[in-house]
Length: 116
Length: 112
Image (cartoon, each protein chain N blue to C red):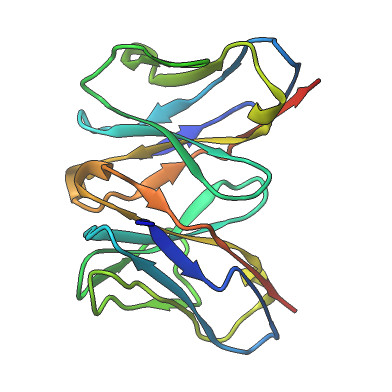
């Protein structure tokens, strides 16, 4: 069964701290896609990254980095030198294109609060 | 601007009323979906479509209807609103393999 687990419900840090958001997924497929979305207090869903199952390279984009490890079925997200603007709910999601549906299975989200 | 447009942004309904949430995209995406977001539960799939004329149920379809007569539009109908349908609704569209997966800005629905 497909499942995405974000065990951290809420994380609080002080500005400039590094923070890692955990994501563990379950799937039987060998081909799948993983996503991270940010939902700021304004409510919209902001796309951060899409990673396919065949690409295990870590990715860095500015202060954001992602660690994909198939051996542990994890796709963790690290924010370096956090800022108040990073305060949001972050969702990890999984899709399995095998059924040609592109449905996203979401985790329950991690609320990150960054204090000045 | 290209993207997914949802209307309305806010809506209050009385129990038993019906209404349609509108969703339109101009990216020529084949895949469109409706999700609802409830506190502590992430986003859950209501209905989805893989192309015009083709729809299917997601995880929480009860109380909702959809149709897809064109590639651009994917309306969500609440047949008889219930307080349990109070939620934030998101429409999304994507190309193949989740490419360009884009969400609308959401509709906050309250059923009293």
